[in-house]
Image 1 (tube, rainbow, N blue to C red):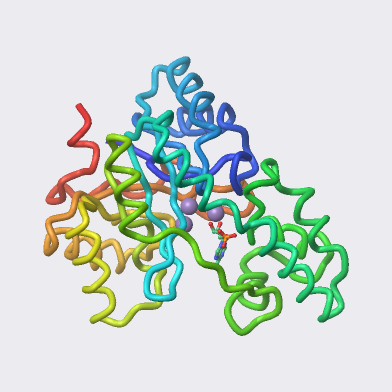
Image 2: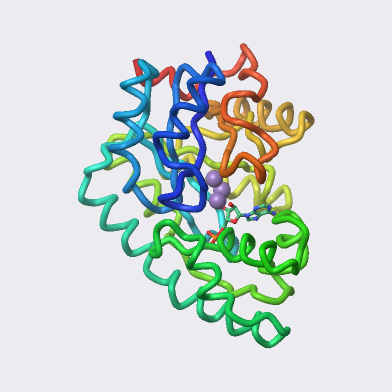
Length: 276
Ligand code: AMP
Ligand code: MN
Ligand code: MN
Ligand code: MN
């Protein structure tokens, strides 16, 4: 099954509309799709309608920003009721600090000789509530400070570099409970991206499982082929359902297009097996 259960639209930090993403996914052979904007469900109606027009199966989704042991972790929620009051309220609170954080990021960039970053980033944000580092990255590329966004995330906006402002997101147990309350399945996004030692990683997976988390991304645009293997083993070890998603944001920025990743290995239980 060609399922792509992780991508972003203009409602968060992607550059395509939900409709354009649906068409692109469908054209690439995706059979089951989910739009998982960061901390925001505003694109769900449009994505669902666009998928229905194309006769492509759809799961309502979200990617929630979480702070766990001082680190930012992303939790994808799949198959949620996108009108559930609990999750809508939780996400609203999660989004709240972004405006102030963005202004502090711009202040730091000004100090290293880059003026106008707040307004410049806001210009790229389709949804001002969701102003994110990605929008700053696009502004820095526009200004010629870096040649692409990959360079930005090596030299700016990350720990110990200009423009980095630590931020407190939702708690992991809260995020899982919002997703569960909304009838969905919680999935750890791109686990290979977190800087955790073996003990912290085990603690994360165990805590996630103990609080009702069910899935983990195995095949994602953020993993290398070695990591497909590694996280496939982890899925088995912890009894997690396996997920697959490109994390597509933009045709020129994203290396992996919608639906073009390797299929999930046969020996894993796909996360979509719980949605018939
Ligand atoms: P924020 O939620 O504002 O901290 O922004 C996080 C977003 O920045 C992620 O969802 C990615 O889209 C983007 N991002 C973070 N790290 C990288 C990276 N190393 N390369 C490219 N994009 C990144
Ligand atoms: Mn993003
Ligand atoms: Mn993410
Ligand atoms: Mn993502």
